[in-house]
Image 1 (tube, rainbow, N blue to C red):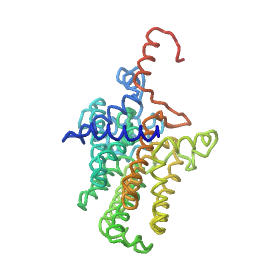
Image 2 (image 1 turned 120 degrees about the vertical axis):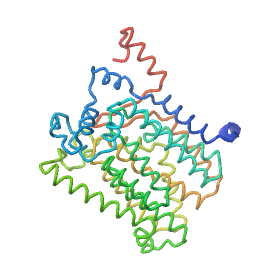
Image 3 (image 1 turned 30 degrees about the vertical axis):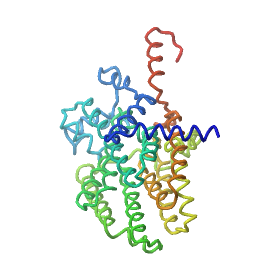
Image 4 (image 1 turned 90 degrees about the vertical axis):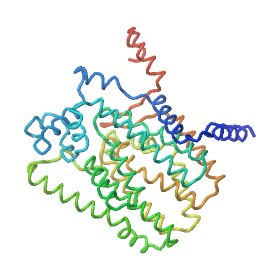
Length: 400
């Protein structure tokens, strides 16, 4: 009874606070502000880089790319560790060129893209649910997991936020030309987006299946090649054509330093694999499990198999890199698919309960993620960061 009263009072408070006609914008800004407050970005690291007391080497190489995109080897390519993976990533070099290598301006733009990302998903969830409470619970949850915080915490020069944004718009638009250019933009931001193109394809398959009410296995496969699906295939073909041409023409001696083995299964890395898988989605595992159960109960086994295959691809490719949270966050379309599936198969009342628990876990859970070489990073809340700053100022050494 106590929990029930608390549950209904929280939902009633949310409904009261969202009465404004501009509630979507208010919810977006509040969610972003809360996520930054609870997981404050490491701006001191950026400050050290800008003052030349530290070095974020990715930004140095990005500047070199912006000055000579197809010949970065001529300007110190070999100096920067593991930057060999960046020679086909062109979004940040383009922004560096446009802003005259102004890192702060690029990060401000990245932050705005992060806000737009949350805003667009807010509008989508409300269009599906027609329920402000559910929309609020979902957006608060999304804003407080890795993908929601990364637009502000990524001061390192990775640029995943731009790829997430391009992929999101590819999900929502129905214009084939827009899909094509958005997919290419995502691909040339980070190679993880190339794999994520398959999740965009699954989104189209899912929507087409419910639109036609045809869930037969071979129909689902056919839907991958018709409608918007064929644009994804063309995007892949064009991307690899450009990449192979650029590689043979300008980087004939290029070799990756990866050993092409599942890094997260090697040595001590495997001990943190379970926590990494959990931390990337946190409470959203409840949502994904609920959608999985909904497909079983509704006997849509073929659709379940197709979507499960895509999710297995997400997990199996994610373990090949140290920064697994970045890689698995490219699977955010599965979260939107789970929302879509639940609203096709469950009652509004039950969905509210599910989203309530998802939100509770995501907001309360500390923002931790794996960032290379078995290092687990905790983004502390702002009050904790202030206390740490005071400790450093007065040399109390409480946090050493």
